[in-house]
Length: 177
Image (cartoon, rainbow, N blue to C red; front, side, top):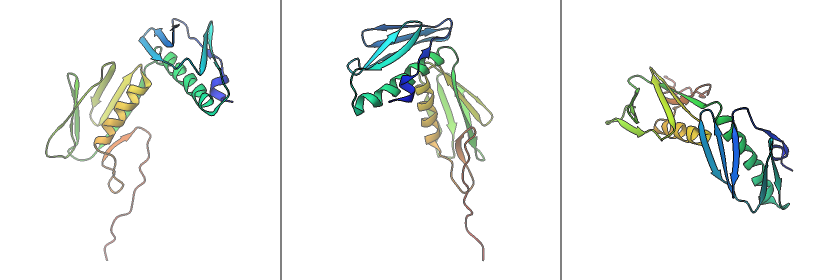
């Protein structure tokens, strides 16, 4: 039994959720999100609350049960309060700036790195902190991961991108004789 799937999902005020076939659409004050779910495994009941009921009792259906519940919760939360990830850039000469619809990074390479900002996301770059926010949790996390992948933090000096609150385990390095 899925602990997440069994829970009843409350619908916040000023938020509407509709289901058209196997497509769930959530509208809220900040925007609209929609997602297609497989209708052959899980039944999604929408009234004053959202409940999910599995149609079969096999491993695949039980796995989808909690996943679908998490997706719907994230959609309901995202249209009411945007998700936000902060990346901290450490290193001498490393810079970041937002220019139009792209994020320009100077990461110590022989060339600058330009990353196009996905539609629906807002990116701010102040000093050494990049803030990525949006209503879709997956898009926010994916773009933050792509930016971090450009220069992962190294364990000796700690240079590179790290998430806010992330602790980088440092190594000692060479010892002089």
